[in-house]
Amino acid sequence: MADLHPAHDDQGSREAALDFEAMYQGHEISFGADDRQSDLIPWELNAPQPLIVELEAAGEITGPVLECGCGLGDNALFLAGRGYEVTAFDAAPSAIERSRAKAAAIDSPVTFTVADATELHGIGVAGGFRTVVDSAMLHCLDADQRRAYLAGLRRVCAPGARLHALCFRGELAARLKMPADMDERSLRDAFRNDWTIRRMEPRHYTTGLTRQAWQSLAPAVSGTSERDDTATVDQHGRVLLPFWQITAELT
Ligand SMILES: C[S@@+](CC[C@H](N)C(=O)[O-])C[C@H]1O[C@@H](n2cnc3c(N)ncnc32)[C@H](O)[C@@H]1O
Image (tube, rainbow, N blue to C red):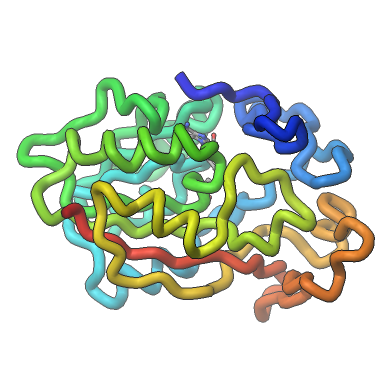
């Protein structure tokens, strides 16, 4: 089981993981580099992530689909609504409880389950998953967990399966805790053994936060503002964060 509580890397400076379960239970946790507490859930949109909607519209999803670190379930519910067979998991039991309640309310057939991405216990489907969706989970893992996760997916995927991952770009380290390096080279290294990267592009992930909420949740650490690319908002005033969009094929 991945450590869901803060830890430090060998320089003693890097926070390894957030207490997501506490957050989904409504407690305050700290996301920012300056340790301030908040009970906001930055990725709560009550709608699917626009980049996932875009992938589906482009024909880049094939069932059966596995969503890893599904949070509050909106991507999985969206994909099931488009006709795909979907299994979705998260390590936080409260996230899965809330996702199941949403599924029950609309009679959605998504299988929501509690599991850890580094172990994938209890995850599987006949013939293997053909698409894996990871919307903002990969960057929650440290370097060893990331390797275990990317290697372990082979056990549950069909040959040639495709993985779509959306994850922090390194410049967000000026504001947010990051358990592992998110520069292009580190990420390519992490995928190398098991996956062939077909696309790696700088994109933006839509949060549920206003600019003011974002600023108070994770103010820029002083001296880093010239590298800060987080002032963009969409037409609804939601802050857009610099993310990688990665598509990879199981080698
Ligand atoms: C930033 S949230 C993104 C949630 C959702 N995918 C979205 O985009 O709205 C990351 C999610 O990954 C989950 N998570 C973190 N580490 C995990 C692990 N080792 N195994 C499974 N889920 C994990 C967290 O509980 C959290 O719900």
